[in-house]
Image 1 (cartoon, one colour):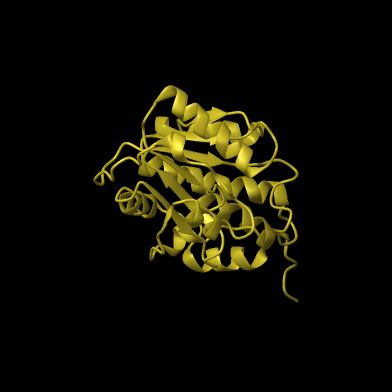
Image 2 (tube, one colour):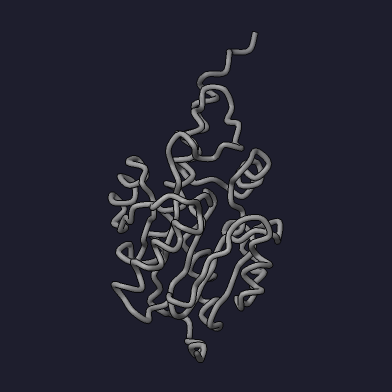
Length: 222
């Protein structure tokens, strides 16, 4: 099968954003006292989804989640919600991919992780414009080992390989590696160190509000 020819920037992308949500989300995060981990995880997703829906038509954003709170946020932003079938991140991405492939055959597809609280709309637009020059592309995370953005000009050609070493796995599957100078798009928050890094880049309003609960709970200095 011949790969699709690269297309110019300005494509009408579909964007799949998997968001786990719920009590099991972000188990490696240790929020400060007074901040619930589930609430913080929802705030991370809210800021990411808000940036996505501001950077592209919300109706072309497909959020894959079975968490009611995540679904409420996504629908409120105008995004479409597909139920997470369970089975992990790859299975969630496949569910979103198949939805797009069925509803818009041949359209370009991007997959973005939903835990990018520093993301700005212009970061997403810049990354998609860069990816448009390649039949398939991958943007690694800040460590260079994981993946934050995965794209294919034909949705059916996208086969996710998330997990340890996913950037190399995706590159091995034919995605061109794009080490873009977009730190806010490449800083996904899975643990405390990543949250510190994202804070340094500037958090979105929902995450700032969630973390402000820690300051309200902190004892007054004596």
